[in-house]
Image (cartoon, rainbow, N blue to C red):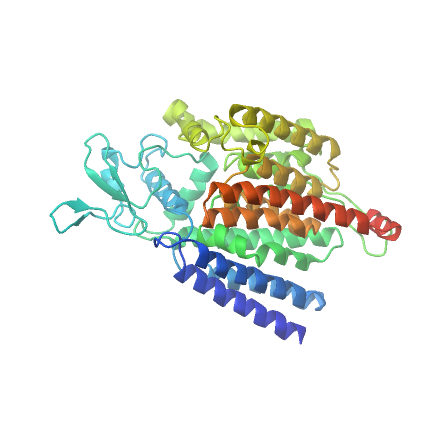
Length: 472
């Protein structure tokens, strides 16, 4: 009965996911409330599927975790990205790189790149009734080519500035796009996202099994509607950074539980590999790196040296070609998000305004980093990774929910479900983009997280604590 109920819930979740992706979008001119409603239905089905599989035989449940991850991921490819245009920029960067051109050298609007423009990324203008040329389409924006100033229609965001994405991300874009013709549209990046989601699911299952915990808790990542949306449908590159950080966590060799023994068994630690993976993650995007600090304590010198060397090595080819332009649009992005003025730090702005909010937020980020370092246990880094990364996301108060992808594997590993509130409220703000909403949901997320911590602390009986110490 439970197998049938779980299967039915997963089928329903896949159907709802497919319908949500195919029919709902923030680019159709409507508000985000219908998409928000369907997203809520998907989360409810996710909860039902998880609840119904808890008492299944482990092998059967594990098979359902993997099959469900695949089914939901495939369903998430039912339509083009519906809340972000980032994957169009990924495709463009990959096409440019595969053509032998540095993506840092010229913005997409540059006339020197006419020869590599694809119609699905740069659709032709349409003649209006008055004879003027116009850009038409829900995803299409109007810009001007550089330097000629001709009308240019594009599905890319920020077409007048160079790319912002670091070298390992560029390598991923080139690899994915190099395997398909340039005319292939959204699906290659979505398929690549699905591959990453499945890989992370398997790694989380392995980490849980090592500790003697239920590997089926990996469903909290693999079946999560948020993961399907942001890692597959919208194909955010954050998923690659998350895969590298989870891989580094696996390489760090948390204590292995040996059946029949009261104490943990052997360790398998590879600090150099940990450092290499963290260096690669940092060269994808900085956000997944918020979960890296607890791993550095494994062997600070070896991990930091390997990470720094890896980071430098992957940057060298691009520096030789593009020089200081490898920073791309990063400085402009920070200004755009209000981090220089302090307006982007929503949580701090509730207490102090403007530039003072930047100072308060920087202090808070330093405190979080120090706490991660001092309190993290190299043998059990998961909680420090989750809390540290989550706290940093709340301080940064980013309006982009996909940044929270880094939290979900560690929610699954630690069982601290209350942290799901962070991606939920960030998604709500994306779909209802109002400053008042952001100022309301960020404090709400803090309250939920703190309440979950207090409830868990209160529920820890002496017997539970003793059991947890043996298990850890």
